[in-house]
Image (cartoon, rainbow, N blue to C red):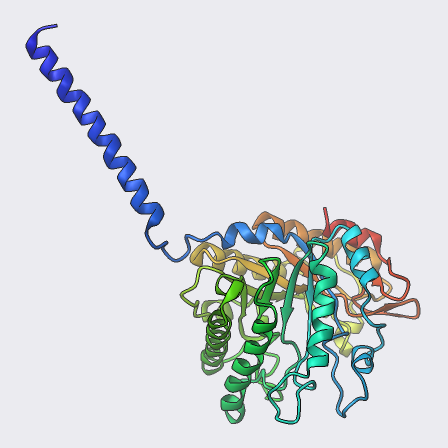
Length: 378
């Protein structure tokens, strides 16, 4: 090899080495530097939750008057107390996640802000039924009177958000990421003329403030709460585009959005005259149009923000129409799996003489609707 060729080869080798060093340094800097918002493992985390079920109308029950005992509250709407055996049935049925709705504001001491230790103990006991089985658990505040965007109640609502969530977060601070906190359930203008609509711009601002206080409060409690996954809400947990677009995302990498999906409600619902008469559902465009639109809104939100979504409530109520319920469930779960969104069935009540959204018989601790459960857990 001539001196000229040797020099050229050394220069080429040096250039290659420099490129490698630059590449390594660049990768190292990129790995250690603060992640850009959206470059988050939350998208990976939600894949673990896959399919879930609500244990509704139990710890979330409330009354217009004071009841005598914890058990009386828990059974006030007709369900038996939640048993350890029920969580075993849920796990054996194939669910990997459970949502435990809890109402807190009827379980405060005389000062109006301190959670009754007996109530906290019972909530913790139920969480442990699921947590001990390695199920993912969503714990929330559910039917609180202060979940309102009413101007007259804003100050108290913000204060209650902070004081209640600080106590919950302190109690569960050492639980790992199998436990997820959900700030609110269907926050809205309670009692207002637009309570069950998509909300107004002013109300969107208030919901964002609720979310901000919830996240800040939990993070300040330390322990595993510093990085716990937290669910924030749209107005009414709505999948409408205006509600999704209005969400102000906290500067936090462990945030997930909670949305409900009961579309079309005239079929899935059972609490008004219009919905009681609509029993049939199939895949015709007339039936899927709005449902497809809502799922598309959710997909667009994920693509735009890189923040995951969980459907924390969905379901179709029983109206002696099991074929249509199965068809709706099959369609919805197919669509949600395609966009990587976990879902939680709203199970509120089941008995042989009274059926609603329930798919598990809590008295007998057996699956009541195997077809739907199998579809949910495919």
